[in-house]
Length: 195
Image 1: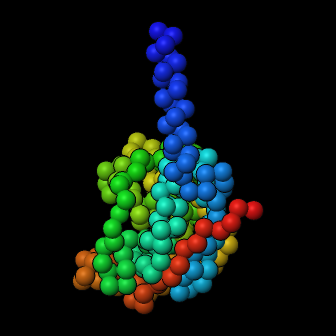
Image 2: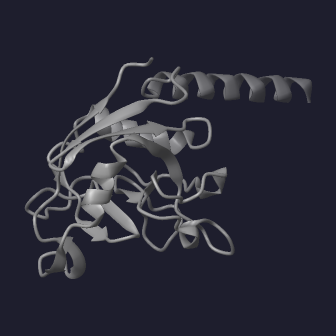
Image 3: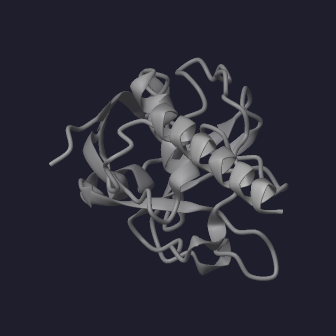
């Protein structure tokens, strides 16, 4: 029994070390990302303590340049601004594997937070994210899975609010309402140096 415990412990330590080596900026518990958009710059501070899987997933897209030249394709005033998944031609971009839903981490979908978009099934988030434009308690976990918050806007909330008041329309290519009439571009996402 003692040998099984020791072997299990060594396996867990090895797995943790391997995961730590794969993580982006692993020693920074609150990494910051600058999002240069066509409306202005936004800086988000991510919370690796509460949402480690989600933060590493998001940072992977950032450092690979996968968010560069994408659009914010869904805007609902006083609710959310969503992006990260499409280019300006509304081409659905490649995704990494879906991640586990960390919505039960204690962070709430409050105004100024950043969270992961997903399908109806709980563990389907991959690259799309959204900003909360209001306190969206209906997106928090309860009797159903919620949407995982993994950080908040620390600079440029006025930019996010400006996005949220953009004119929208039905888009035939996307097949839904709430698509900005004038494209809102995410020009570049950059992981900032640790402070």
